[in-house]
View 1 (cartoon, rainbow, N blue to C red):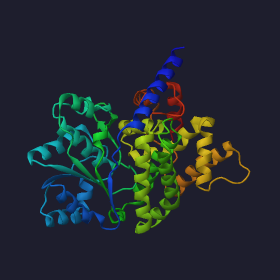
View 2: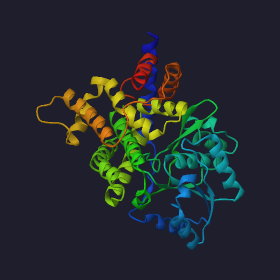
View 3: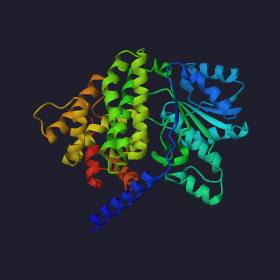
View 4: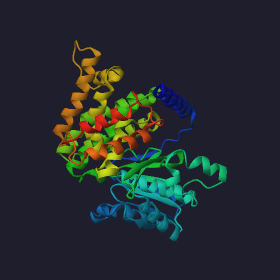
Length: 412
């Protein structure tokens, strides 16, 4: 009886949240795309009247000199830039506070996030802290803990954010979400709010040409997870959202192996950037689910990179959902050419899941994790369900023992 009441509460909450998402004012990021499109960004920044910007990135990208083109273009446009390059693979509260210090010390007016999901997540929450200097990152944990309190307090909105992805996966250049790690508790948690969404997204395939194959594969399958989870979720915001998820899935199946096998394929790289963007738009409105909640908490516990976690977990959770998602997966199998004549819905759904497994194998993604310890599973599951319920519109709600069983199945 208690479980039924919990489920009813979760679904009622999700239904109300879904309605709110449908009527919310959505301002999509403006896209600047094509080879060498990063050179166009300073002119846009200048047009907006900004003369001092914070660039949030990581030490690896700085060491590769990948930002040199951007820095030269900023100098040519007369824009002063100040760099925070200490973002960790799973950005921490300390990273955010460090970036905030650089922003404030140099009287910056806007933020450029340059890199994968980690610099973008760090930049987003840094912007939130600029607007809400008296509100800690932990108090922003969850949904809409930035804009609504800010409106009540009459606070400023975050500074304008320009996103330059160097991986094709997170879709963070178009989402309202960021993920933060707390090393003290080994926990990863989301911060989600409309005001975190970037205003501009620069999709420049030239910045992704030298990505290692394993980064190409795991980030690409991260985008696949965004698209699939949004498609099978309970929000079903509108037909446009569903079409964007389908487009992303099709683009990934068509291009990820090309980009994995030949990193210099500019066309495939550009298509993967577009896929990540479309998937980001889809899950921003359609939501994610248990793949993400389990993945976040495996990452928090063991430092497993986000994209790798998504890649491995996706087929296991799809199998656990079972027949409740056969219709949606059968549709995706039809639209991607995976299904065959004479297959029923269950067969098509299973063929789609197998296609994910086969694709993972071809692009070097392992089937399981060696890090998972039996004694950690209850805590990982508890944290995963705490993140998921009632916020995420999952097709089927997990009990604690269900979540623990799925995590157990991921053990090598």
